[in-house]
Image (cartoon, rainbow, N blue to C red; front, side):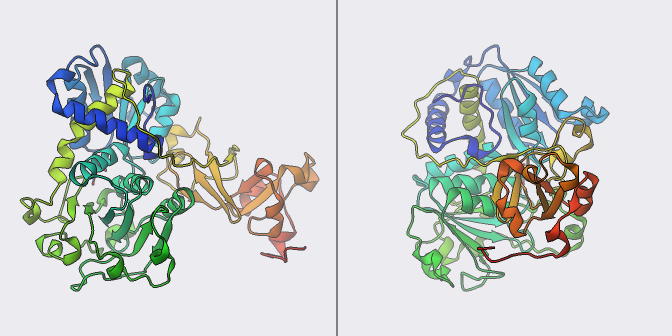
Length: 472
Ligand code: NCD
């Protein structure tokens, strides 16, 4: 397999076979740490961390030093030209001249992809806002495999802040592609965003069932599940039946409980003001029948959601997860810099969906204000770009932050064929929109936006007709 010069932005960038091969190298490296010194001699890694970090930055830097390479680092945005308003594109070009590999942590969602688009050296995403954190996922998967073997068929419960916890976002897709069952146990109000669930079901197949609030699966009611995802390789029957009985489905018990802290730094003002509850994982919860065998995992740092009374428990994995960050990242750096090669095992290919791309300079903005496309420093050169994930209903996915956007109005290049007087826009949910081919599509967030660009309201704006019979 060849990871040489490849970026790692989301966990989708790696196939199962590549992840397995990376873990084979991780095993080899952790068995013979001192022997790896010199593999990356003469290479330089830049770690750019514009958000706080202990584990990720230090383990990346330790990994590079153990490979015999050098490290240059910035961890305070105020100490860089970022604070003078320098764009990510320019920073990417500059740092590419100083380093052979860039590791970026940034508060803006999609920042790592943007950096990779302009850098001439590989870029590794060490966390971009609430979007993804693929190398943490590698540490999590490696721990699951080391402790329990094959991930296929495991039941993993995700606990805590599933809305902003980027580690859970990468992990969800990784678990799906390795064939695990996922139980979603969010703190109320911090459920998994819709765009992630949509991608999970449309691209990874499988069944998702939502149970609604406070679906208790144990006697004390401390363990609640709001949704479950079952991968396609497994019998679907339970998931497809309305009112699935999780107690029955979980007879075999949960294999791991993955806990995340409330990501308060990303909360909206309403979320900060609301009295959100964060149920605690402690010895008492873990004494439940369904959690008896469960590994306790956490990307760390913990705040109050994971009690210290779990630290001596043999099921607790969080310090091991963090320690494994060094050999996992050593393997990743060595492969990315071409210092090592390993044979990838036979692929379990997750088919990649090739969506048509929507790229016009106007009309639609990403719905996520935390997206890199919204930022002042980037707007002079960066235009929103989307995958058209569905034409009916019209749904776009931002190529940077992956949030969904549903434009309200549409036009077609075919309709007006260059004639200004016939430039019409209609509602995106009218039957007329169904006739538009993706390559002819023009989309607008609002009627004002359409009119600003010289389009006049069509029949299905005025009458607000939504659907008509198929033979019309
Ligand atoms: C996580 C992160 O930064 O997303 N930490 C880590 O990298 N191990 C989790 C967190 O901050 O809660």
